[in-house]
Length: 291
Image 1 (cartoon, rainbow, N blue to C red):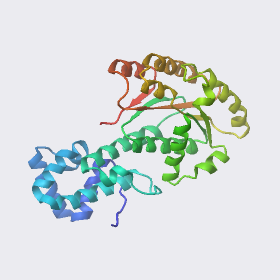
Image 2 (cartoon, helix red, strand yellow):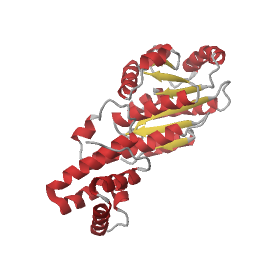
Image 3 (cartoon, one colour):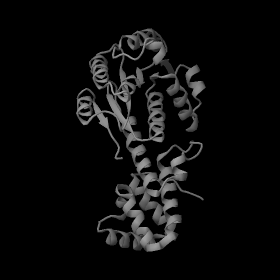
Image 4 (tube, rainbow, N blue to C red):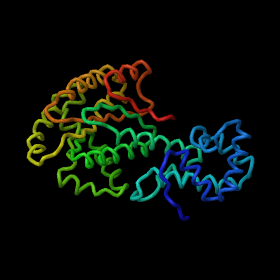
């Protein structure tokens, strides 16, 4: 299947995909009927904001023949949002419904833009609802570091380190070369907290202090940090310790000796609403794609 990659918002990509697949006249007629039957003003926006409703109306119009169109629209959206170098679609793109595919891709689009828009000394919490969304978060955060001549520092578990490297390889990045060149520096939770995870940032600051001289000598512009200690504390239900760590980081990065940008990934289904509200207060921004 040949796909011409279209830039734009997910709704704009869906609109362009329908036009290229069906032709202008047929696409306009289809969008008119879907919008009328669904009681909305824009069929392309419906496909992104309520893909289940879009799928239902398409099935009423075309029966089982709607599957081919929906698969093509999802494929266009995947190719427009995910790096062209990605080795292939994740499992959801093969097994999931049209609605699941679009929700995952819409979330990846929101995460991608939020990460690439981060500024020095931003402290961002980003939620993900699937390994694929976490993959795109990690990949684009490393891209951000490279674009800004910064060292990406990963404070992650050993399991996450392996997964993050696989994420980069899947999207066409030579993770080993990036580590060898010093573009990525990784320190594991076990090294930082040999007696178990703790809400103290002192072990991480000690590692950053050791890296500062090299950053300056190599004329790097700062540190691009992704850390999962707080997110792992949240997964364990230790909300108070998680919040203490995040509050300490938020105070520290504002006047740290070199520019620091900090991204904190969290699973979308952790913490109480009250704890999530408190987390927002100690971050520059919260990114939570629709589930």
